[in-house]
Image 1 (cartoon, rainbow, N blue to C red):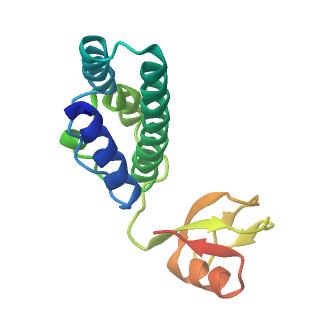
Image 2: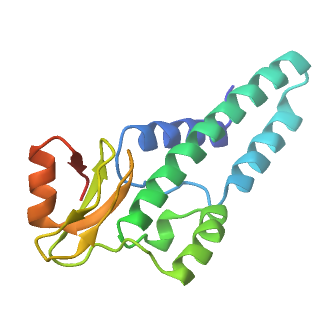
Length: 161
C-alpha cells in the first residue's frame, strides 16, 4: 500500500515535468513531503530493504522536482515575470526572497527582446547606436527587437522572450 504523500509527490513531479509553467504544489514545503513519507514508513514498513528502496525512490523524485522547479523559478525571475507566492514552497520562497530584494538585472523593457547567444559574438553597435557585447556562447541579453531579429536570421541567437 502506497502512502497518500508518496502518491501526491509522484503526481506533482509528473505535472511539473509535463508543463513549462510552475505548478501549484500540493505541499507547503519539501520538508513536509519528507516528514509525511517518513511518518508513513515508520508506521507501516518493517522490512529495511523495502524502506531503503522507498527512500531511494523518494530521494530521486525530490531531486528531480527541485531541479525542475528551481529551473522554472529562475527562468521566470530572469525574464522579470511575476512569481505568485502560492506557487512557491517555503524553501523556494526563502531562496528567491534575497534575489527579489536586489531586483532582476535583466527585466525585459518595452521594445527589447531577450536572446541567448548560440556562438560568441564581438561587440556590435545597436540600431540605437549603443555599443553591445562582446558576447559568449549561452550569454543572455536584452537587445532591441530589430537587432535581435537580424541576429536570429543570421543564426547567432535564439529569441527566448
